[in-house]
Length: 93
Image (cartoon, rainbow, N blue to C red; front, side):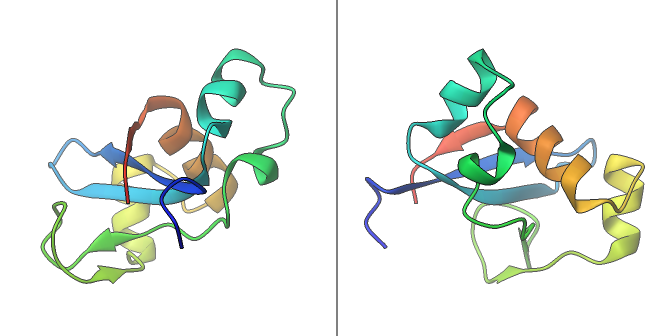
């Protein structure tokens, strides 16, 4: 997928484990300034990823429910994606 169509939004948890979602280019800033933009228009999917190393390198995997709950105090994907988009940092793919 060309990087001009997508961006990675990375959120670093308190234990330095990074979580990320794939968002549509330009939509994160638009959503941050206008919360009426539907989140489904911002992210390409509600899949939450981390890496096997917990950092920005390694194989992308889906984190366990326990890891999500310990980091975000919930396992609700909608709430977690909103937190990642709100507080995360956009990085290129």
